[in-house]
Image 1 (cartoon, rainbow, N blue to C red):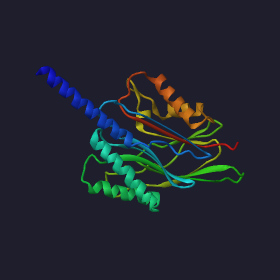
Image 2: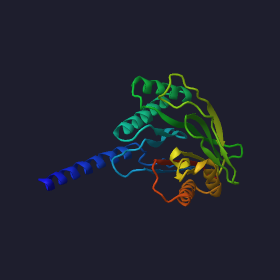
Image 3: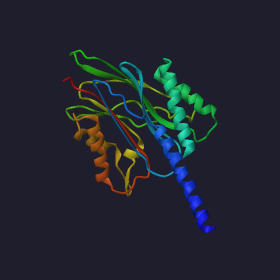
Image 4: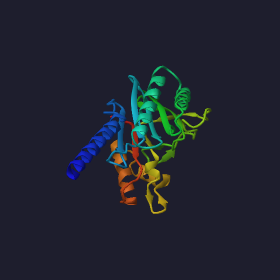
Amino acid sequence: RRAALAVHNAQVTAAHVRVSQALQRALLPRALPVVEGLDLAAQYLPASTGSDVGGDFYDVYPLGAARWLVAIGDVCGTGAGAAARTGMMRDVLRVLVREGRPLVRAIELLNDVMLESGDPLQFATLAAALVSMRESAGGGRELEVQLVLAGHLQPLVVRPDGRVDLVGEHGTAVGLVERLDLTCTTHVLGPGDTLLLYTDGVTERRRGDEQFGVERLRRAGGAAAGRPAARLLTVVRAALGRFTTSPHDDDIALLALRAEPSA
């Protein structure tokens, strides 16, 4: 009887893990768009490989031939509840933007939906951007980025010459209060410029009482200046690994988009 109970418990646990991991995979894009002139890369590192689905997510959603909704966020909690909240946020934001709502208004309406649920844990930080490809004055391609930060960390723009800038203006997290304070800022990525979005699992990575922090992230970004988006993420992960080898206790999401230089 003890052996049968142990086998049954193991089967239930394994099934729970499979369901949770399937939920986690469903929250992330199956593949990033492949577009000439746009270099995209993303990595997601869950803190747990078991049944605790994390609340970090990223999304790249095509809105037309040369326009995309790009988002990254961190939803409160773990498990199936966090997965449900994450999926709702992603899908509601997609629908509102696809229907033509300005980005700030779309996030305000998303906030209304979250508050109407009455779930005290249903809040999140979010960085959302409308990215458009256009011809530059010099005849090449550049990316225009309209960026809104709802309680989320400022992304980095890594220039080919090694300069690294923090961009965007801090705003209110979604799902907490009725009135949000949000600002949409516009940024242009010239050939070779890369926008790096990330969740706080990166900057809050700990080595004792010390955090990895934004300045180390800036140095890692500068070390990969002018390199493809995937290489930038590899350099950031290597910097995190040098900072500490201990297992991370928070999910990590990284999303980079680069305006490719003309051939």
